[in-house]
Amino acid sequence: MPFGDSSYAPTVKIGEEYAAQLMFVIGGNGSSKHEHWDQNLKFAVKVQEKANELYPGLFKPIILRSSTYNQYVSKAAVIIEVGATGNTLDQTLISMKYLAKVMDEIL
Image (tube, rainbow, N blue to C red; front, side, top):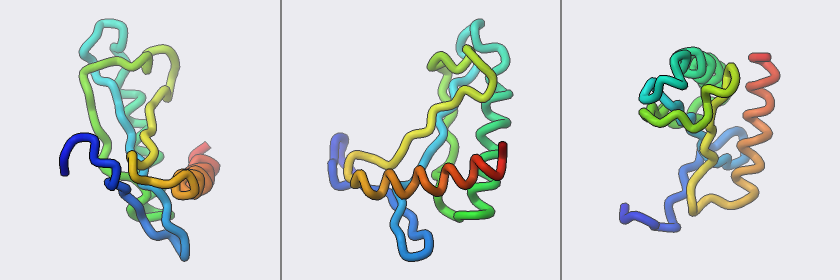
């Protein structure tokens, strides 16, 4: 798929709804500021495992990067990408509904 293709819209069907897929982006230890990056990764894995149990396919695989993204600022600081350029606002809002249910189970 070419860069900038606005037709890319990763979705998953949950019940009768189509939700934009989610993806964790976790900054690694590319910086001395972020020596506890693995705690953020463990949190993301925990959330993603529960999501896979409740709503298979809601999350795409976790992406690890060497950047910190300010994720060293607090515990469980993560980035969650929601869909892509082709997803609709409705699809992203549906995703948030299911993410909230997952987080309710985790927290």
